[in-house]
Every structure is written in structure tokens, then in C-alpha cells.
Image (cartoon, rainbow, N blue to C red; front, side, top):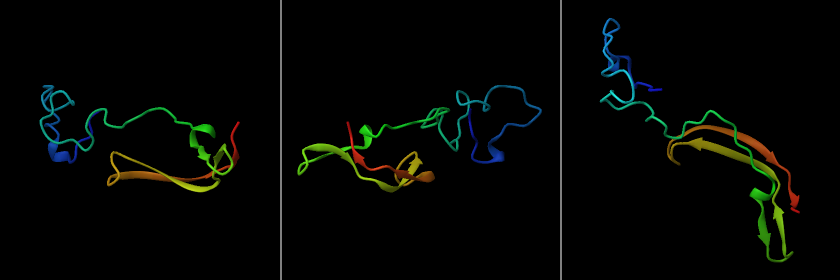
Length: 92
């Protein structure tokens, strides 16, 4: 799906030619390039995926607490964020 930056980028409503209508034919700069970071799924992480190796304890552990998860095309283009609480403790 192509998201146009502005309605002036759209072809005339009465024009049925595909030129300028889809990501394959649009020559302008879209709001989001086709397929760049768009996902229609959910993501999940196990506790083990968040673990670090504790040199003092010689074991894997997860530091618990509030974490802000940010999503975007780049670190300077964050589109959304969500705060979650990670349960801390040892990892088996």
C-alpha cells in the first residue's frame, strides 16, 4: 500500500491509468516507502531473550522494571512507543 505525503500527489479521481497510483508507478516521495518496517503481525520476546550474563553470579539474569519500547524507521524517526514492565530474576 502506498501512503502519499499529500493529496496533491494523487492522480485525478477521473483518471484510471495506473501511472502514479501504486508504489510501482508513483514517481514522487511516499510518506513510507513500500515494505519499509511495516508489519502486520505481533512480536514477542522470551525472558531469556532479555537476559544478560552476570559475571559475579555466573548466571543469566534479567533486570526487572519499567522499560520504554520505541518503534520507528530509525532512531530519529520514532513513530510510537509503549511502556512495559519486565519481570526480573534468574533465567533457566
